[in-house]
View: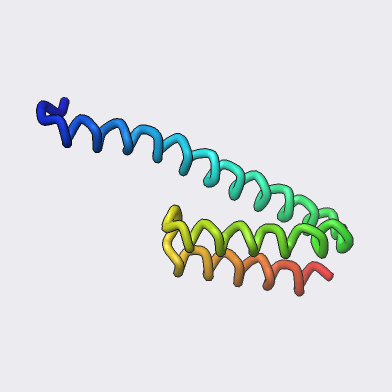
Length: 87
């Protein structure tokens, strides 16, 4: 455990950030699973509705550095590829 005042503050900040990041990552995974389920069911309307939302979320996470920008790009690319194949 941290002993210095600034190290203790950093620890508190990291704990808050961990909860914040966990929420966003969980949301990202949930939306991706729903999108893939819609693709599996060949539900074009749902996929068309969800794709911009997921893309926007992934770009936002990359901008906030919750995930790496290349990871966001890769995920968006794979989802678009899946949407084009499923339609």
